[in-house]
Image (tube, rainbow over all chains, first blue to last red; front, side, top):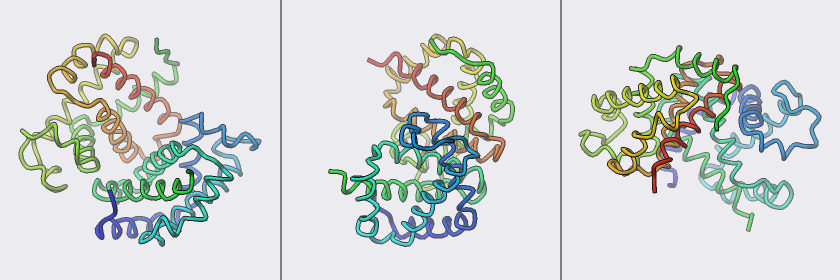
Length: 143
Length: 147
């Protein structure tokens, strides 16, 4: 399910709107991941505070969504462009790739909440495809 | 046995009270057919589904979306025994319609996104957790009679 030219344009346009709100959206998506899917908290046992108002959740949400935004710039070669990030996730973080689907879902929920008019079904399918490709690229070095 | 807290019941009933079934239902089904086009395989009798515009203006899709949401309403009104409430629906989807149960999850996800768009910030993390638990129980009940 690779990205067509139409998908890439939709993704670039939509994430152009996301960029100014990267901090809020990133925090909200991560907070919901930790709250609605409590098993994801196992990766953050070293944080004192896992609540939505935690400074660590805010900082890390920003890190994650900035990563996704950088992937938009690398959309023509995600596997190559995300190689270092893939190595980080594979060898250091060892996040089970099943969790990529979870954070992706919560990103989509927050996008729908914050951009109800822009996040049309057509934009949704392109963004969903893009996030799936990003997840695949991140999982590239796992085995 | 599913246990619902008072807050979860209140959350779920609150969400339903905010929905216009004739709007949310169609939107959720349209989104499913557009975002996951392979789901169109179950609707070959619905006519033109060739592109997003066709799907969004298709009357049969809209009518069926409304039926689905009324079906969910029944589950909400019988939250303590969704399994029995849906026994016949489960048989229908398995024996007659032959729907791959994975499609229930796809529709559930699209419905969650439509509700997020409708409710905006009032779709809190608590609301999302309760809502997704409700949908998981619904999906499980629909899968029950498959063999």
